[in-house]
Length: 237
Ligand SMILES: [Ca+2]
Picture 1: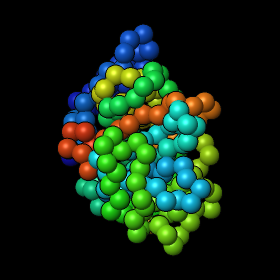
Picture 2: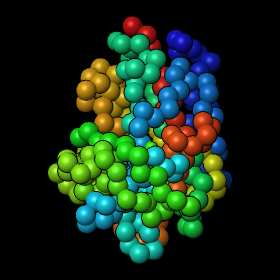
Picture 3: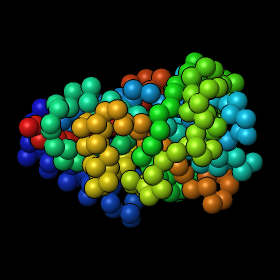
């Protein structure tokens, strides 16, 4: 669907609501975009020196540091080129929406960075609250591996652009939280549309400067409303 004045106004209203720091975050609607994409894949990197932990097929993603000072970072990728955005379109604005559903801490800054190397989602599926991960399976992304157990990251914890594409404060209210739109997010998604071979998604990194910052989010294995969503507003060529 072509960008419309109505959708532009809706986005402006949403941005205005999200930038109001005086109250609790407002759950963003995920409808009303030109395209709303579910992830093509998602996973969590659980800090582990041997890369033996993952959760490729689990219902949840994690970002932040545990009480035991172990980091978790989430990976999420959307197939922009194959997901209904016509080739040659100009990306006007985008939002990433994640549903936070479990945490023991209040407001934490959570950044998203563009990933620079491909990674995988295997069959690992952690039990219970899933916060400790489970044994990595073939093809899983781990703290050490892009694809367990054959391909490794250049840097443990993932290869990504140092500067964040966006940062959002995530509190303890169970709801959707929205990142963007920012010019860098628009540039990321435009590049994924124009050069799909370079689309490795974003890595989601919460404040790791202190412990007990972890947030749990719904993964693509969750029920549809709780999955990560990429809202895309674009102008067709
Ligand atoms: Ca997954």
